[in-house]
Image (cartoon, rainbow over all chains, first blue to last red; front, side, top):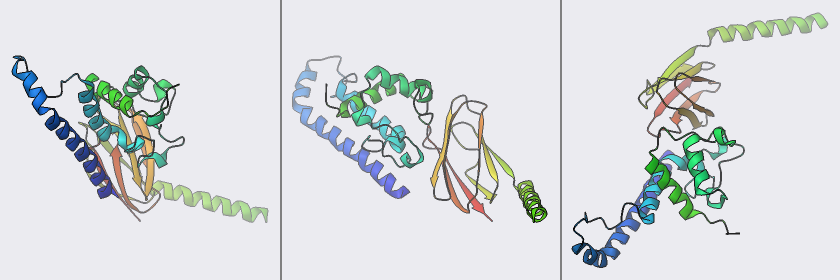
Length: 146
Length: 108
């Protein structure tokens, strides 16, 4: 079971790695042309503050810290979900905005009137990690817009 | 008949107290994002108290068949305890710090 989880996490990371590599490769000719005239360029093909970069970094944060409860699909079916009733939130269908996501990540569920089992991550994650995580959660949100 | 029932109740109570008297409480500190020990052997009925000596929260849990639990988040200086009532191997983790691992062997 544990090996299976590790394999799935590795596959998750590998999939993102391949996706990033593909992005880098696909972007190479055009980006290279742009950078040839940009003296400030450090060769990064994904600007640090770009949404894609945030989403990618956020996916790593999610895979490391959130997946245990919320699951690989962010649908609330992580391996620890069976411990909780109500079960962890289905983040794909969440109607919360980015500010709310940021608050509940930093302060934990209890402080927000939600599950006491959602830990406060404010001391563990940097602001950048939290913001990246929020960007990732926004990117996977599949709730139909009203 | 009533006296017999009372007698049985008292005997059972005394036995329960005697068992409790033999149950031990083990203390495991959490410091520097690590459990103080990596492995721990306890007897059936023993409890383990997890003491947070870090300046941030920990959240101890286990998904093992021998004992599934989540002690929730608790901050510096706080502690939570859990009693082990089934023989087996219990893999203990921290939800906040995925690298924290502890294996507890529960035996008769």
